[in-house]
Image (cartoon, rainbow, N blue to C red; front, top):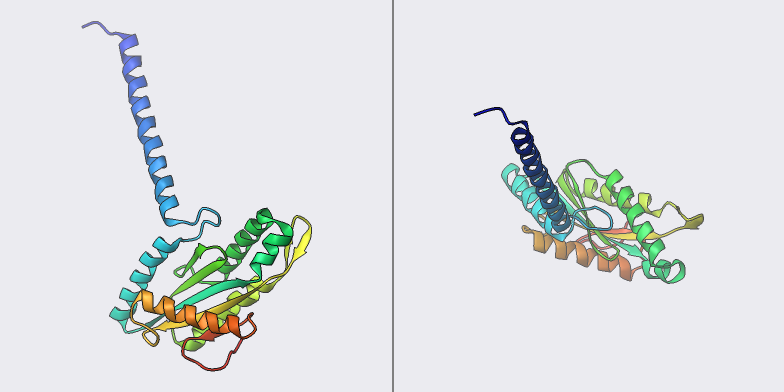
Length: 204
């Protein structure tokens, strides 16, 4: 059969087109996966990815007879920011808060946004209550520094509830509930601090 340049070019074109389609499909799949596992506003882990990461951290902690911790965080007075500066400024603030929280933890730890102004730190391996308390304090201090939003200086504080495996629960749901209850105690007693589940007094 004589050499047909047009046919060869058509085949090459078809191969490139198929490859391109595969690449588009792969990128689309990655995008869908990212949307399924990450908060669309901040890029942080969402509730589903947090659940997966906590499961892994708990398996690791059980196997190594070690501890892991949950820090449940909630911004103080975020509604007021939205009401006075608008939701656009509120979204910018949430993104900045997310960046600061990520900067306070280790690479193996997980920072998640549950929605609204609620965040969670899942600390992969902790030496005990003191380490978890230090992590909570670091987060509070980082978030409490002023923000520049469109030339306006904005200040906000954050409250934190801390729970530790296995002291305050042996599964993710119990640990989250324990941390949430500790957070509620902080919110009820002046905010802008942390509490470790089951402890009296409000350090921080």
